[in-house]
Length: 127
Image (cartoon, rainbow, N blue to C red; front, top):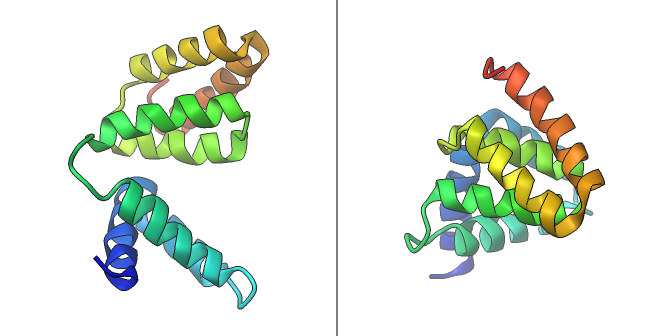
């Protein structure tokens, strides 16, 4: 698969998970300085990384919540928490993922994840 095909596949997956409006807003905000990175990450992360059927989107979302939570990147965690809901992850599964973050990364990180999850879940009408 060439770079263009990976980008198109990634773009479709990125929109399905994060929402078309969010993705289009990010791409539109890219300028000549940031556009190459946006395009590369859409192709690489979403086209290559999410583009096969070996792991379903729900499981990938749970993996992302654990990894991004471990890194403490709460802005990205919030984006991917919303995406996880779109991919069928339940609030109970989000809670379980946060428990794993707490076990392996510490209570303060789990508390941050819970704080952000509460915001996302309230906005989604899940709390």
